[in-house]
Length: 379
Image 1: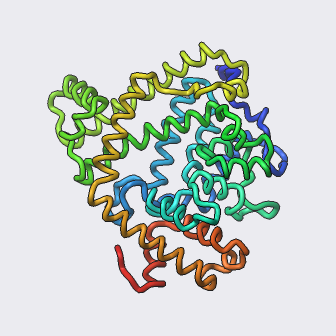
Image 2 (image 1 turned 120 degrees about the vertical axis):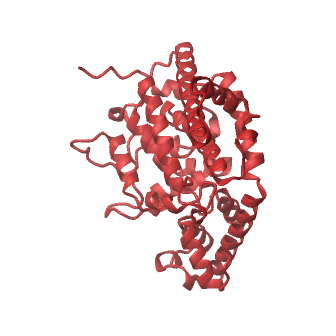
């Protein structure tokens, strides 16, 4: 059977805006496939297995990490991309790379590094992901970073402050940061990764929250998106209880959101009728979207998780210790460059070198390094 024709609005690797440093084409892979493969083989990608999503690695073997989260985003993204005719390889590359710059200890680490870097350019984890693939990975003889395509890099830079967008645009005029200055959207594949990221973390944080004992299923039934699929699961399988009931509820939630995104996006594309991938970028709002009703339900679930899981006293207590570890590490490294590895210690931008080094740590390495440098045991 011949492959289906690529929709005009989909990214086309044959028409990529290219890499920062031109390279010969690979004989058996598209440029987006090649980007995905480079990301998977990167050091930063492997480190994600020991970086916190919500729960620290030592708190349980079955909780999500940044790596498993990225894989779930990629799976959801590819499923939706296939239905919409988008480039699955680009979706997967962006999904697998979007958290490469995330710090140890989740968002606590990002907040601490931003605090430590005030006066030195601040810290944004999306921008750090771009730094990883543009500069910090050192695997190739001809360039630093992974030398990824414009489209992959565009998708990685999900958020960006105006100040940083201006700095990027000064070096790369009309490039990946332009939309943060003049409006517009990233590719539909990048938009898809943004939505798939939200679907993935809402679902797996429900699972991990119940598994941890920090939230109860009865509490979750206050949330419409959970309640309606819990009831549907019981209507079809009255005998279900416990974990099987929770898993079936989450599975139905995921399916409902995926189908909603596909239907809402098809309607938006039919109305906007973009003639090519760049026309989709020029839309005044994302074309890859939830329906208004599902957006409202997803937002209620997100607020519930924020109030009852992310701000749970036990999670906050863990966060406070994690923040102390990273503040102490930054202070030590900034005050004594000999404690940094040579390739970081030799850099003239001491504070940024400290932030880059700490951001690349896994949770357990940061804990061990803190114990070594301070003699304190916080975990």
